[in-house]
Image (cartoon, rainbow, N blue to C red; front, side, top):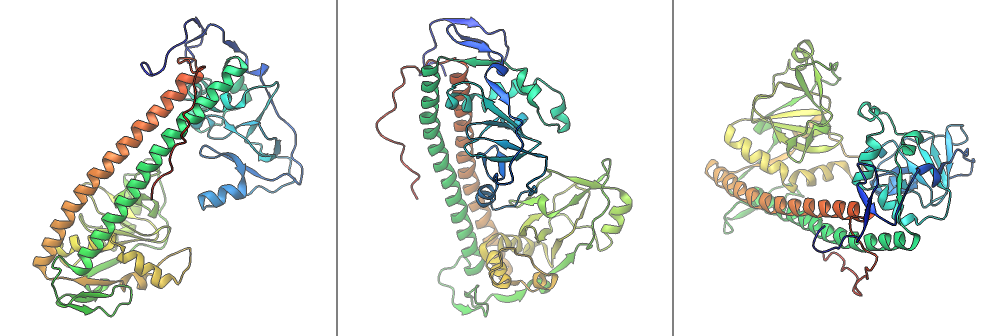
Length: 447
C-alpha cells in the first residue's frame, strides 16, 4: 500500500501481533466493551435467516434463490433458535474461515450461530470491514485449535481478540473509503469474470462447429435426421454412442469407504471442468475394488461420464490412478483410440447439452437413463478428418486456456489488492481521513 496512500504521522504499540502499531490517537479495547452476546429466544413469527460469507446474514429464502440451492430447514418454535436484530453481527459456522457476518434483517438463526449486539453507538461500516479482514480472521483462528477439527468459534473466542477503535468520524471515513475503492475493484473483477464466460462460450462454439460441420466450409451437407444436430457433412456417418464405443455402467450401489483405502472412488462430484477433482475424495479397499471393477477397470485415455448430479460432465482417465466408479458414473471406451479423441471433443461441445435438453423435456433436474446414454447420437468423420479436427481443436484449447489463465491471474491480483487494502485501512496502516471520492461512478460491466 506504500506509495499511493500515506501513513499516519504518529503510531503507538498495540501489543497485539495481528494488529501491529496503530495510530497514536486510536483506542484498542476489550471486545466485550463494544458487543454483547444476544441470547434472546426467537419468536414464532421471526423469519429464518442464513449466514453466508458471500452475502452476509440474509433471509433463508433469499439465499436459496440467489444460490439456486436448498439449505437445511430448521423448524420454528424450537428452543434452538436465537433472535437476531438488524445491525447485529453474527459468528457463523464458517467464521474461522471468512470472519464475522453483518446482519441487515430481523429474524431467527440456529443456536450454532452467535449474534453480537452493539452495546454503544458504533460506526458499523468500519466493523463490517474489520471483522472480514485477513488479520482479524487470523487473530480469531489463533484463539483455538478446535477449528482444525471443524469446531465452531464461540463468543469466548470473540472476547479474546481486542478491537481497534478509531474516532467515530474517522471510522466513518474508513468505511466510505473502502466502500468506494472495493466497489471499483469488484467492477474490474466482474469484467474479467465476464471475459472468462465469453471465452468459454466462444471456445465451445468453435469446438461445436468443428465436430459437427468439419473444417472444410465447402463440404456438401446432408440432414442428420437429428433435429438438434441439423445438417452435417454428407460423407460423415450418423451413428449412436453404443455402436462406436463400449458403454460401461457402474454398479448401482455405493462401495464401503475406508480412511486408509488405496482405491479412489470416482463419484459424479469428482468430475468437473473436464478433469478429475479430488476435493472430498473417498477411498475404498481392495476387496471392494475387485467387486466394483468386475465389468472392467476403466482404461487410461477412455472417457468417464456422469449421468446424474450433475449430468454430462466428462473427463479422460489419467495414468497411474487406482480407482473404481461410484454410482451414476459411466465409462466410454471408443472402438479405436483415434476416435476417442474426437468423441471427447464431441462430448465437450454443446452437442451433449442439446441432447440432454431434448430428452429431459424441460425438466430442471436432468438425469439420463442408461439406454438414453447408449443412444446419444454421434458423428463419425473419416479418420484423416478426425486427426485434423483434433489437432485444430488442440491448438484452439491452448489459445483459450492461455487467455483464461491470464484473466484468472488478473482476478487473483485484484483480490489480493482488495484484501491488502482492507487490512491496511482497518488496522491504521494508511491514512484515508482526507479521502474524497471521484465524481464519476464506476461504469458497469459491458456486455
